[in-house]
Length: 400
Ligand SMILES: Cc1cc2nc3c(=O)[nH]c(=O)nc-3n(C[C@H](O)[C@H](O)[C@H](O)COP(=O)(O)OP(=O)(O)OC[C@H]3O[C@@H](n4cnc5c(N)ncnc54)[C@H](O)[C@@H]3O)c2cc1C
Image (cartoon, rainbow, N blue to C red; front, side, top):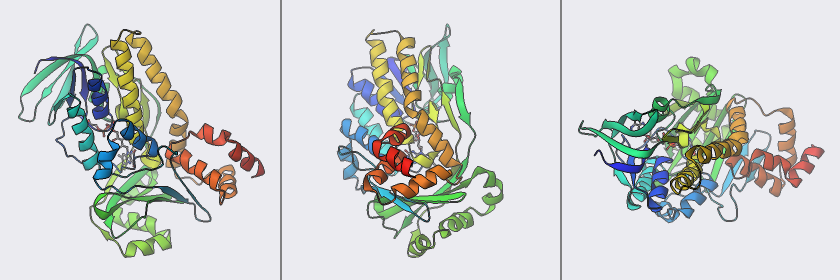
């Protein structure tokens, strides 16, 4: 290979493929590498929030997703036991969410990157960064047949997930870390129709959620606190079903359904990384990682892929220095995601909502506008500060 590129992107899923695609569409020479070969599944549930769907539409890829037969999701329901808050998660322009299998979504994104002119290499394991005079100038690795190869670029982008090799090799600083809080387990079920609803059930120290995906299957995920990991890991299935049994009406619905997969599980750390340095940048989970309870990872990866591609374009155009542009890239991300990060970490404790939140939930119940706003905050369509500052919520909070 030993070719020179403008950008090498390591990792070709939700963050890497769009970053490569958007740069190649701007005319840059881009190399996209992933050790996986696609279609390839990954450990993840996969609700794509409306703002993520809006990104697919902007890129001209939404029609392709719709054509895969993935059912749209038009409403979210949060069941707290005594009250259920139901609303629309999106905006007038992007009203829907989807829950596409990653085996479908990631391949669609990779194909779009290839069509944009990106040089795509699957089955390629990046082993190290090439660093000269304290600057990252390329990568070394091996292709699927064991052939050692290297390539050079002006910038190497790590879109290689939470255990990012690029971040480690470049020495990216980590900050605002919080330990894993929740253990999540999910499986796919047939015979559990959702009729366009994403349902979440919140109970003390437990929660579960479900959304319909491809092929008539419904993804059903259940979680418990990480403190119970050791006690519960000997009987995952029993604990998964016991969690769902906390809502007898739902357990009754599940009796008519059939589990079609094994149960997959994960417990996720929470952290930010400084997303740039001399000759390198990070995007997606490699740059910012959090618990999956608020299902923000894919939409965040899409959003930051757009920002990363735009930032690098600005650098290559000579509009400003790499450090200045990338400092703005970092600051913009931290400001945008900070409140949702805090909310995500709070929800991931599975502690009951604080008393004032319980009063607010009671007060908004039945008020369509307020319930929509609550749902949109949980979907990431509006930020927590926007939600709490909105006039209808301020007056409801005062009353509550
Ligand atoms: C249990 C669970 C549930 C989740 N549920 C949701 C949800 O419902 N909605 C949502 O939006 N998000 C969810 N997420 C988060 C979501 O999966 C991630 O945010 C998203 O996958 C991030 O995409 P990414 O491209 O940054 O990284 P990844 O998807 O991790 O992709 C990284 C890629 O880099 C490649 N790679 C890594 N190292 C190398 C190397 N050295 N050489 C070559 N290739 C390499 C890997 O093969 C991989 O393909 C969930 C995550 C988990 C674990």
